[in-house]
Amino acid sequence: MAQNQSEYMQEYSHADQEGTREAIDKFEELIHFNQESYFDVFQIESIFDYYHEKSQIEKAEKAICMGLKQHPDSTSLQLRLSTLYIEQYKDEEALTTLNFLKEVENNNSEVFLNLGIIYTRAHEIENAISNFEIALKLCSEEDLADYVFEISFNLNQESYYEHTKNLVNYYLKVFPRNENILFELAYAHDKLDEIDNGIEVYNKLLDINPYLENAWYNIGILFNKKENFTQAIEAYEITIAIAPNLPEAYFNKANSLAQTGDYTGAINSYTEYLSYSFPNAITYYYMGDCWENIGNFYLASKFYKAAVKIDPEHMESLQSLGRTSYKVQDYETSIFAFDKAVSIDPKSSDLWRALGKSYKKLKKPAEAKRCLKRALINQHQDTKNWIEMYQFLSENETEFNEVPFIELLLSKDQTNGAIHYLAAIIYNQANKQKESLKHLVIARQILPEDLELVLNKYPSLVAMPEIAEYINTQL
Image (tube, rainbow, N blue to C red; front, side):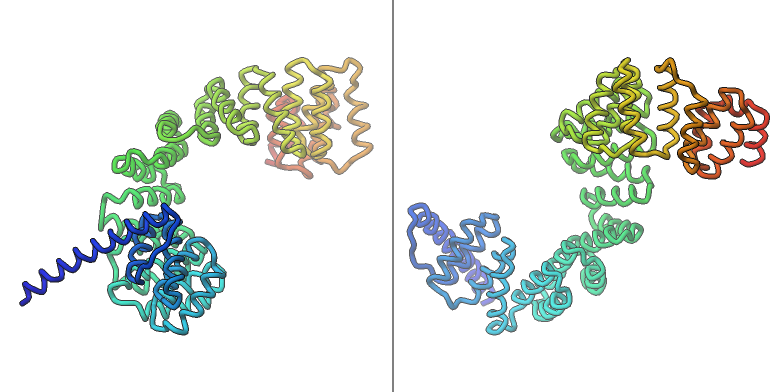
């Protein structure tokens, strides 16, 4: 008898599949000719489920709408419609349907699950948790793991990471080896910056399945956050061995290699990334940064230029292109880059100063002076701006008289530490060491962090005994 029962069930399943296939074929023909025909509720459910699982949402929606025309009181079809609404972010329509179903299907766990999802997205977290708890109590033992995963996934999506932790940790003893649930727990730890806990969960996943490329990839990210770049690189290398076509693994490996100072290795890994991905500004920018760190400013400039070509307003690439082009004496490109940068950020005194220096190198003093003035206007207390303007005036204006110039500035502003540093420089150049020391002392009191900058730029200051003694006793 048991054997007959088994045979019967196999035949029933086969017949059921055949009936579903016939219903789908019939439905396909009807929508092709824009016609309708009768289907029973079970057939509509099967047609909907078939298209829904294949993510053919338009056909799934047509099936459910046709079904509800013919069976408007079917709660199973209304529930499927609410799921479709949720996936389409039509939360109000879904809520209307679910509030009705809650009254007539108060033992249906999926109704409460869907309500919880809607309330989570609405950030009504107390209502969400209340409905999730009911859903977990009502669902079958067979469905429980799927419900825990679905709930934790939706909580994570809306940044309720602590709730995810509480939920998953409660059920972890029941599902200690469920990969989907463990992934959600690890993700919550990651977002809460509980890095060691996240690594521990990913290691549990890898104990279950050492070939999970997502776990290796994500544990690499966490090691990177801990600045444990060597282990991050190892994790990305294993990821690549398992999934060699995953572009992000090459990109992240390159970033970690750069952090360790292996710029050549990083460039090679970025190049591999580009072989699997479309060219993008940020990758070319990082490659340029690696070449710059190696000291090859010419190649760095080429990659920064490629980045700017893709994204003309990528500020980091523009600044870096301006800087490296200046170093290789390509002043026209440097001017192009800094000019574009100041058009994006006209309040930056650093950019105006850099643009002024490039114009100065290109022998365009009027433009250089205009830019250096803008730098001073933007940041009147920047020592670098005053030094650059002083150097420009000394080199380009034959009638420039340094001492009257600084005395005029000091008569207007005695509180500006940058001007006092400039006074120390000018009086030192004029062999007025007493005045130089006096203003250096004042400057250091106002802007102590700029002392090293000034001494590096003008080491002659330290050559004077009085100043050297002051510096040695104060530092």
